[in-house]
Image (tube, rainbow, N blue to C red; front, side, top):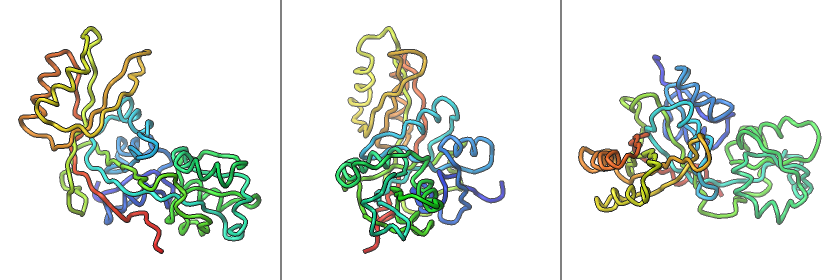
Length: 293
């Protein structure tokens, strides 16, 4: 591949596109319809890396990202960008003053969930239709010929699809943020984001032995006595039967030569399975999706 290309969850105007352009402003950006499609594009060499949503501060993990990464398209987590998310009610310009008469609201399931209280208070009788992304919802209503409909999305998609922002910042909580992860088949090498590093993180996947009582306590102790801070621990089903889980653990440090390898050896001695999913720089964009007053 002579030119670096970045796959993102499309279409144009999505939150993910904005994150991809913020972290890689000088690369070629290609939209894909779904998160699995973005990952498949990297595996099939249609793109150098993929930028996909991983976690939202209000609604938690984006499970399709984790599950597809673990079970179908294993690749390395090589960078992370966290951005504030401001959801807006978007309508066609001719419906701007009639937004309370909207019959159907379209958006991604997480965006709908982030605006639950707004929808209950102002559009309690509106039908909810889920779309593959907020940008797809905006594109869809922009092409509708009839019907009063709205989309929940960002200011970028409003501009992209010539829509009016009927109500701004409608998410239920002000501290709405999303983590976007960069996935690649190898390491970052020469494909580094053009910005300063804030922190580093290492993500591990751990499976517990079935015949070891108190195994999870022992796992956490391996980090605790080394004074390694964990920013997140989450269980996901292994899809092999009820009660079978693996644990995704985020460690607030870069992969080193002593501490994390020491944890790995201690957990292997307990019979745990442990795999490093990535050790990567983390970036912040404080005003990436902020509406200009």
